[in-house]
Image (cartoon, rainbow, N blue to C red; front, side, top):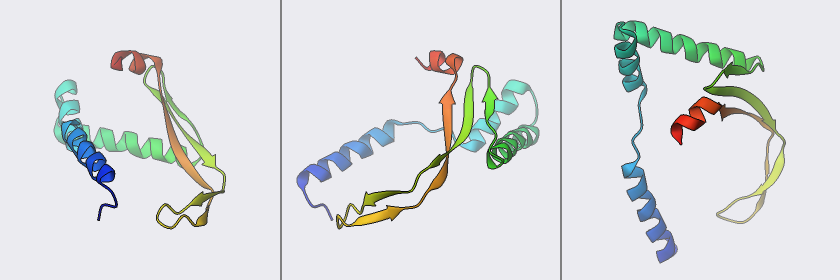
Length: 113
């Protein structure tokens, strides 16, 4: 499976790093929102789903969603390009596609640092 000892060691280090990363799941976010807002978990879940659906809808239309201090969601188009298959080294064509971008706002960036 591993083509070299270096790749094996690198993969083991990545596994150790990933075990230390804590990820907040959607259900945990709903619980935190409900507690902070003093509402039921059902109401918090509806609010979160409404937010996500509205952001998705705006991005589908090509609009930006800007939350001052938090950040901006936008859609950019990647041009078609040539790439390489890492397994074979063969040249492949990568089709153009739209990607979602998020740029953190100043308040969010400051709070993380």
